[in-house]
Each structure stands twice: as C-alpha cells, then as structure tokens.
Image 1 (tube, rainbow, N blue to C red):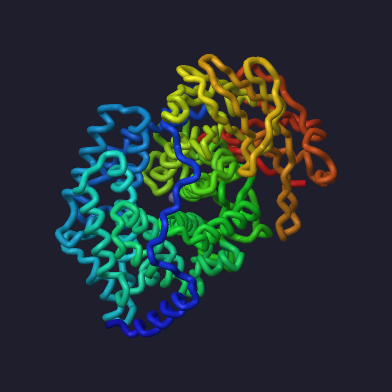
Image 2 (cartoon, rainbow, N blue to C red):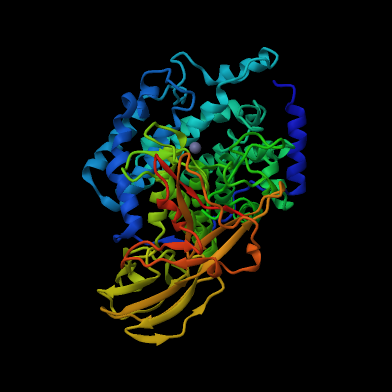
Length: 618
Ligand SMILES: [Zn+2]
C-alpha cells in the first residue's frame, strides 16, 4: 500500500463532500449539433484533404520500416512515444473511409486493427516497450527505489490513450466486440495500476502529470461505449488526482477563471487534450461544471493565446515548462513563439466538439480560421511532409517527412473538419463553413440533396442548391466567417432579409424545392491586429476575411520595415494596404502602400526556402 493513500482518500472525500466531482452516471447530454453525411465538393479545402488522403495516409503504412506497427510487433520500439501514431492514424483514416468508401482503405484499416490487436499481451498491455516489460513493475519501481529512477510508465500511458481513441473511433463505424474487448483490457490494466488506492497517475507523466491525464478522454469514450460504471469512476479518479495537485488542478483553475499558463506548466497540446476529456465527461454525465471548465479555458485561449493564424502559440519563459507551453501575452514575439501542429489540431478538435455540444457559431468560426491558416501552412503541398512547428514570422518552413507527433495529428484535424461541414441543429440544417460540400439530409428534411457551391474561402460568394427535395419546410443556417460581414442573401435571385439566431447563425426558412438556389455574398473586411509585448516592441498584422496575410521572405534577405516609427493604431488597415489586381479565382493580394511588399494568405507564404512575415514592427 502506498503511503500517500490516506491523504488522497481524504482529498477525494473532500471533493465529493464539496460536490466538486459528481461521478454518478446521469443523463447523457444529447449532441445539440449533429453531423450530416456529407463530403467536400471541390475547392481549396478539398484539395488539402486529398493531399493527405492520396499521400501521407498511404505513406504512413510502410514508412520508416513500417514504424506504425513495428514497435508493437517487434518490441522494443525505437522511440518511447512510437506507439501514439497508430491510434492517430486509425482516427484520421477511419474518418477518411467514411467519406471515400475506398475498398483498399477499408482493407488497410482492417489489417492495421488486426495486427495491433494481435500484439496485445494477455494482461492487456499494448505498447512498444521491451518484450519483458511490465508496466505495473515499472510504475512501482521508482517508489521501491526511493523515487530515484524515472519511470517509463507515463509515456506508455500516452500510447494506450491513443490506442483506445483510435480503436474506438474505428469500432464506432465497424462494430467489432474484439476491438472493444482489447480497449477494456487496456483500461482494466490501467485501473489496476492507477486506480483508487494505487499509484498516482499524475506522477507518471511530464509537466505535472498533464501528459498522462490526457488518458481521461479515452477512458470516458470507453465508458460511453460500454456504459460500465467502473470506467466513469476511473475518469472521476483521474480528475480527483489532477485537482489534488496544486500545479495541475485544471478544472479548479478554470472554474476560478485562472490562466491556462498555470496548469500543467501550461503545456498547450496536453492541456487542451485534457479539456477534450472534460467535454466528454460533460457529454456523459450532464454535469455543467465540466462544460464550464472547458468554456472558461476556451475564453482564455481565445483572448490571450492565439495569433492571427488561429494557432495557439507558445514560448519558453522563466515561469513555464518549455517552448511548447502557453505564456502570457506580454511575452508574445512573432519571430520566437511556436505554434505546434498538435496544438492547432487539438484546438480545432476542441472547437468542433464545443460546436457539437452547444451549437454556437463562434466555435465553428475558430475551427475554420485555424484550418485555413495555421493547419494548411503546416501541410506541405506535395502531400507527405508536415511541419512540427510553424511561426507567424520565419524565413523558411521546416517541412519534413519524418513521423512526428505533429504530422500524425494534423490529418486528424483535416478529417474532423471535413465531417463538420454540414450539421443538423434544432430542426434546421446548418452550414458551419461555406467550403463547397455535398450532403444528403435525413428523412425529416425529405432526404433532400444539398450542395454548397462556390470557391470559398478564395471567393466570399457562395451558393446553396437543393435537389431531390419534397417541398418540406425547414430552416437553413449559415454563419459569416471571422473577419467578414454578410452583404446580401438571395433566394432564386430575390434578395431577402436574414436574421441571426441566439447561437450566432443566420437563418433562412422556406419550403425547399428542387432547383432552389440560395446565393450568399459575404464581404471580407481588411483589419489590423496589434501585439504589444512587454519589451517595448510593437507589432501589427493584417487579416482579410478569414485569411491572415503575410509577406513571403527568404532566408538571409534584408527586410524593409515599412511601418517603423509610424503611428499604426490610429489608422485603419485600408489606409496602409491597397489591393493588387488578381485573376478571377486567384488568391487575394495586397501591397503595403509606399513599398514593394506584397501580402497574400499566410498558408501559402512558406516553403522549404521561404517563410512568412505576418507581423511587422512599428
Ligand atoms: Zn506535436
């Protein structure tokens, strides 16, 4: 028995008494917003999705001597975190199959799942450490040895977290009791090691344990799948342990409207992955405090920790853990801060799940901004390479083919966004992005076919067209992108008024007939954004509609400083930038007045030899 157990029990009892945790299963919260079977219908986003589906998706199956599964099949693997990639691949590839129905991909998915399951030990262990490795002994050893040896167990938990996530995602679409059983065995092993009265999981992961407690989301997914209370209890135990650790304490800190910098050393990717767990807990229990935890964190990240690319930025400071940790806005420096692609991905996931649970347009808008800027910059145009980090200002993009956490995360965000283009909410059909797409509606909408057309986001004009309708009356919802305003809506050529509902979506009600066409014209706004860090430097960046704008710079090239010493904040962006003529269907470009500097969308301003300058000194 570990000597800290009595303390833990007292603390857990206090939380129970104070009502901080409520682990009795309650009503499951029905999703407010539900995805409609749909697929991208051409345009820029579809191109980026195809890049992954035709390139890296297949590359991952054989790359680096079958790195995806070799660590499980020939233990030990080559890297302590090698195990995370197969779960991430299963997530992204499963969603890809749902839209492509590609028989070759189905076969690859089935084979990958079978091979992964075959590598599981009798005790439930499914990791990449040595063949004689025992996770329970490993966790116990540091305590037996007076805490001098660093356990490997925390990172093994990370692998099991992604295994369960990937396998349960696959199983949701391809029901298979063997897959659920494999996940139960992994979770049961983890309960045996980290359950009540056992080792404290927060001692076995980096950054105050926040990397190990990312397990929360996968455990709640397993509870949702099996409805077995022991998994919900284990989730509650993980939360209690997190709350018991003053430097972790994510839920308590967020409910008090604290800063994300202060929990788990502010480790951005893992902190947001923990928030995904709290959202699942809300979904499974209906306990609003879990939702509030996430919404308060979202408010803080949105207000203080995003740059104009929509990516959550991080930088090493004396008060946080490392360069991948959140920092206070006064430490912002566009040439030094990092946006980890895992962070961008997790931020997009967080926004899409929040959309699902609340139906609020602001979450769709942030997901879209991150996809069209930060995420698309991280993906190289040849289809294989990705960036680990991007920066708003840098002289080249470090695209690489190597299998890294970020290159396995990024495609998950592309696939998830693709699944959330059209949804059903409050009896209406909602377009969360105006990226071209095709959807088939449910019976209550007369099984109408609905097509989102146009060339958004390159063009701010888009249409919705109906086919095979039965004249049913229902509302269609859409939202304006960040940085844009609605200019006009026409149904079959006739201009109409459209009002916004309380969730932030415009609504159009009609009895829709085949051939009906809704034209929606947005007007992109040109806007300035300022960063005023504590070192006295001031920075300005510009956006045009959903696009962050950037100059393309080259390594070693001397950069003109068009704003040095000027009083930018008193001037609107249009006084500093003039539009350049662009070909029909081309990307927008602006020239900084009185200079040769041309700005274009951030996502296409970098290559292996060039990089973006998004923020300018003044
Ligand atoms: Zn990463």
